[in-house]
Each structure stands twice: as structure tokens, then as C-alpha cells.
Image (cartoon, rainbow, N blue to C red):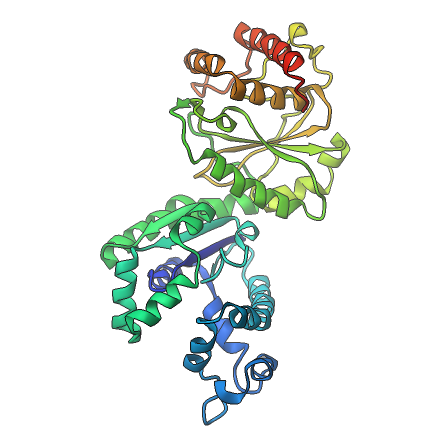
Length: 402
């Protein structure tokens, strides 16, 4: 099963995206609909709301007067938090029931207006955000819901802004055009990413590789890492393991392969081979079969690097089931040679702009000489051994510790 979180600001067109995904075959878990169900007449949820806000939030026939309640909570942050404390746990519980009832091969899309605000992003395999200009949203809210401009602005201001949503998004669907454009974007997302992603998660298979060649620095790499790390941390809970961004994408301004390298520090390889492996696979990071030693973009290994052969370089490598985001998750033992090397090379290159400038040329040479054209082969070029010696000297001078 693939778990997709869908969100967007009020008036963004999120419901249109959910409807199109349902037409394609997705199972939709609509949090807005559930939120209405858990406060229907006769429910514990409605009784709790009346106890908190009095019966002035009821209609004459005893149902929730949503307009009256909205007027209270959207103008008062404390009142809004009280309402969320009542409704959110009930919505989450019912959503979990619907997820559990979905078929094992389903793409389940959880339509959640406040996904970002309540911190749910790490619980999904993928987060899709629908983004629309505020002016367009104001016009839609007036036209489709009869809201005054002041009320619509209050509703928009009470939610996360576009920058915060975009930081949580694996996919952003812009909806400032027509419905045909939106449907085309949703259809492409469904066929190219969601369907193969679900199959890969179910089969615990890494998405087929694409050529990994040096690219220009991407300023969003740290933000992408943060999303992945949060997803990994959630998957590994209750274990509280150190997680680091390593590899070329962890060095600002450094060109390199567009692969996010994540290092998870484990107490032993036995731990890496235990339940952690299954949890990572379920979260969309299946084990790469047959890889037990280091497989990396910038770590050389020979007697000159202090590696001493394979000793200390053992790891377990997990990849990404998501065809849209190559990831390498390295499980390494704390204090091992490979673990220390990944952190040292990252910090050394972060500290030395001249050495950063030399790295892309080496990557281009490796890409050109790689037998599969992938550019991610073993880092046997002498540059890596020499660079590690420079990094060791820098560590001694600076007092660096991992």
C-alpha cells in the first residue's frame, strides 16, 4: 500500500485533485468528511464541542452550526486549539481504520487540509501539495462558498503559508490554470510516479536506476534531505538513531549526482539486519540486495585511507522505491571507518571552497569511465585517497570530531 498525503490551502483546488485521483483508482480518505462525521448529532465529538463552546454552536435541530463555530475559532487561536484537541484525535483514529481497510495494493490518498500544521508529513510515503495564488483562492472562496473577502482572508491566514507547505511537499501541483491542465498534471503524477511507487513498496524493490551523473548544485537538496530524514525517523521509531545528511548533496554549492545520501548510525550490523530493515522497506526504502560494503559517491578505500581493506567499511544499503527521488540510505556502525569517513569528507568540503571546486571534475571523469554509464562506480580514483589525507590533516588542525 502506498500512503499519500494530499494538502493545500483553502480554495486551492485540493478537492479537484482528490476527485481526479479517485477517477484514476486511488482510495480517498477525506479528512474533511471524517471531521464532519465525528461531530455529527449524537456523537461524543459533538458533545465535547458543546461542553467547550456552549450550545450557541448548535443549530435549532441540534446539529453543529459550522458557521457559528468557525466565527469563534478562526478569530481566536486559543479557541481553535481547543477545537483541534477535540476533533483531531477522532479524525486520526477514523482515518487509521479506513487505511487499514484498504486493499494491500491500493494507493491511499489522505486528503488533509491541515496536514502540515499538525505535523503529519513524515507518516506518508509522499506528500502532494496543491498550490494556488492567494488572489485566485480569494476569488474562488467568494464564488463557490459565498465568503466575504475578510472571512476568506482570515481562513487563509489561519493556515500554513505556501512556503511552509512547499517545504513539506515532495510534489507541488500548481493550480492557477484551468481544470484540464490540473487533470493532466494529476494523470502524469499517477502513471509516472504513484503507480510504480506503490508496486515497488509492496514488492520491497528499489526503483529502477536512472543515470547518476553530476548536476549543478540544487539549493533544495537540504530541504529534500530533511523530509526524507523525518520519514526515516518516523519509520524507525521508537529507536532514536542518529541520522545525517552525507555525500555531495550535503555540501552547499557542490555539484554532484542528484542522489540524497542519508547515513543512519546503528549500534551494530545485527541491528541493521533486524527489524530496522523491514521498517525502512515499509517506509519506501527497501534493502539493496547484495551490498554489504561501501557503495558511495566520494569515499575511496585503500590502505592509504586508513580503511585497512574491508574492515570497518561494512554497511547495509537501502535505496528508494520512489521513482521520482533517488536516495541512498547507508546504515553504518557508530565509530566505524566508513561512518567516520562520510562525516569527515562532508565537513572538510564544507569548510574548504578550493577543494569543493576540484570535486566536480573528478565526478565527470568517473561518470565518463563508469562501465554502466551511471557515474556511481567505486571511488577508486587517486583523488579520493589524496583528498582523504587532506581531510585528515584538516581534522587534526581544526580539532574536528564526528
